[in-house]
Image 1 (cartoon, rainbow, N blue to C red):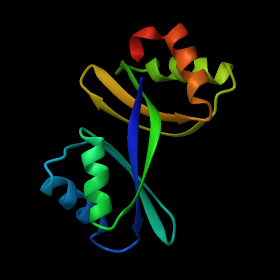
Image 2 (image 1 turned 30 degrees about the horizontal axis):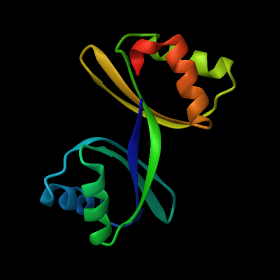
Image 3 (image 1 turned 135 degrees about the vertical axis):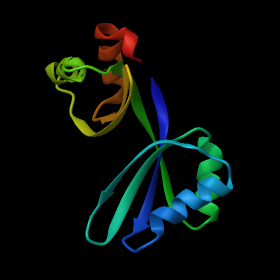
Image 4 (image 1 turned 90 degrees about the horizontal axis):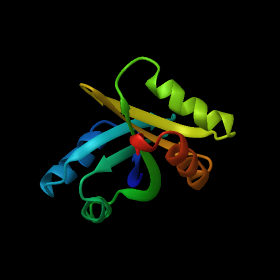
Length: 133
């Protein structure tokens, strides 16, 4: 399934991650998943939250640069090889994963992917792995 991901651009200076967390907490918005990428000058925090529209509004009101992106959420078994089979299905169809992050909860792993062709990826996943979306 597709979900909305929030990307927040951050200056590389102390406390900026905490500012994002503080803004979300003050607005009673729970972070479900996140990852952080960085360069020399800035960082990029990608977030999955419960209330996307409220989170975007709160972060923008706090002065953060925010972008929304549609990504694919995959729910696969948390066991060796499960993700590999899914990614192989996409690779066979020449799908490139631009970025991915994941978290596991006991029996299930939740994986967020941003492929180069979202619609084609969804079609492949629905056809070959309908139980993971």
